[in-house]
Length: 187
Image (cartoon, rainbow, N blue to C red):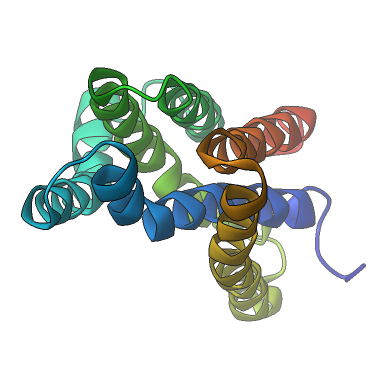
């Protein structure tokens, strides 16, 4: 692990935190919409599908709007905060706040989605032999987080209720933001 440049493992940890929160929510959203908010299965499925589609389209919108003017680290940090705010809105437990929260989470995920690859490529520019193993490590950590997030989220929901699951997702984004800020001079 010492062979990677300073900031690389922190960047990987921030990506893992973001993926943890996203997949925690994605795994519980359908059940939350139908059980907690009383929406039909069809409505809940439509909302989940629209949310996932928005998270894939939002990087295009964010990229077009920012077009490199703000810098990768600033965009990623802003994305983490916007998504954390979205998760916080889910704590309100009302349909209007849920939709606003999901919109913010999709925008935040879009802002943060392309940053890790760009930053990792920048960090590994002087050591091209570490690029593939480094990106593999980053994706491995992200995928482990994507597996662990739903398990932790469902456990929190079952033991402590919906707010606990959403609070964990929000905290994971705040941790990602703090990690990124702590390394911003290196990145």
